[in-house]
Length: 343
Image (cartoon, rainbow, N blue to C red; front, side, top):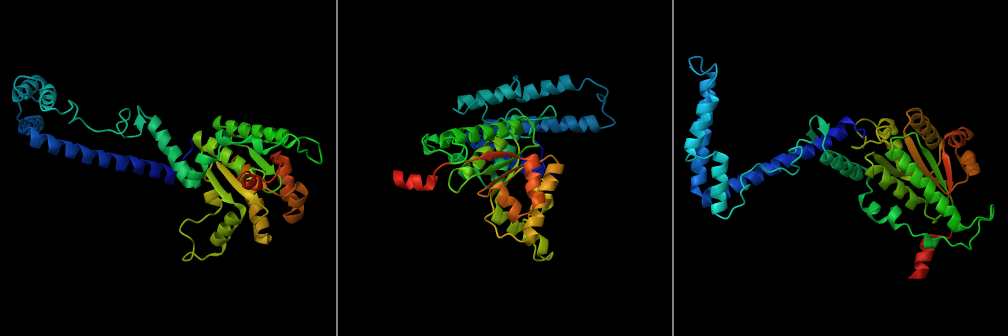
């Protein structure tokens, strides 16, 4: 679960805000309890006064007890302030007697395991991992769509057995079952930490390629890895903005090579729908080469065949894809049309 510095800072800001919010809750509890049970205020003031006196006595060079023996008389003083009881026990009894929960004045934590620090014994708490995944969902821009489009909502009824591929004779159902299996395996490899994965989803418009990229994105994010997701047109437009804009005109959230290399998985949807020019060809080759060199995964979906990729972009790009990418074909009828017919 690798994090950039900015991502780590973003998660820690969540914990800062959590502690502030919980402190406000503690203050409200204290105010309510003190108004209902004035004896609680007196008890806490007495305990605080004795604690301050202890600190002063420990810091005083003239203190006869500086070498030891301070703890016992101090505890006795605290019990005296609480009527001969342990102050914490006295506080609980007073609260219970006035119909408050006994822990009403205890510190408030969203996560009791790490006490809202994010760490337990120097290791990340499970709540920290959940916050990281929540951050990854936010940064991917896919939080809402992934609730609807994932492996659990995949409907194979859109892929009939009687629709045969003209080239190999396999049915739409068989081809898509293989495609789904390949996408699951890809996501499982990520969950296991094998991020040097590259996958190309090809097939005609409307057969579920984008849906499958969403399935992969959800599994990868849920396994604690960051995902950046762009349509090809949006990605290359943003890369062009970052490349050609002056410093003052650069967008606030620039998308450049450094930004794209900061995520575990990059998903580029609908390659071939963008306006292709020399900049796009160069940017695509640079993007493929840098992520492959760094062992960072890529998923690309496209309506184009390998021959089209070679013709439209370049042979070196199609060669890179053939060399490194797992090719997954989708085949079927346009699902959008089928949905309209079913309605």
